[in-house]
Image (cartoon, rainbow, N blue to C red; front, side):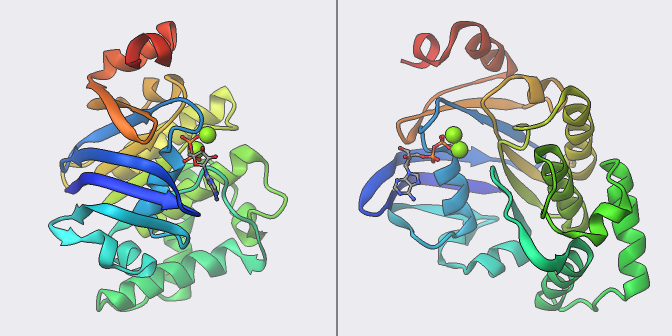
Length: 247
Ligand code: ADP
Ligand code: MG
Ligand code: MG
């Protein structure tokens, strides 16, 4: 589904990703773990098409299509979703407006009819319920004054509404307390665990992986994948540290 080959990328002329290879098949959840500054968020941004992140070598295909030649909105319309480590606040735009615009823009791009206000609200209520986020939160401006945990849950509501085929989730567990972690983990499973979907779950810690069981675990260090294993690798990293396991 997602195939990354020899990916090199730089920011401001500084090489961050240095020959990264990764392949995720449909139906799989892959976890990417790694020390601070390894390039995990950079990988997420490069996949999302964020300006300023320059790919200097390598290829990324999504269902056989060249992802890197697509604009960010085309990547989203093609079924990819990026969950941010630090979700942005958008004063003056409510979550409901934002989500309906985003969904209908994607539907239009795919040649589908837009959802009416009523249809959209029904969908939003269902997904908010899944993440136990009060509908009142969705009427507020995007992320403005939200706690860290509320931002992450709102982002998962967004993912539920857009219903992507492939999600890259960057430290979705950061800032979550234990109850919210469970809710978010179950939300990810409900929305993304399917034979035709894939997930790249970026995390520092094993704890999210107790809820969202990865099929494959990778260690990303100094801009490339340095070790790949099964779920046990995450446990080993947690107890022994990156240095010992992946040096
Ligand atoms: P991780 O998410 O694994 O902690 P990042 O991808 O955020 O790591 O960062 C990888 C490296 O790129 C770090 O050394 C970081 O300082 C550097 N970096 C990230 N963003 C920028 C930027 N906008 N300008 C320059 N360097 C950056
Ligand atoms: Mg970091
Ligand atoms: Mg990061």
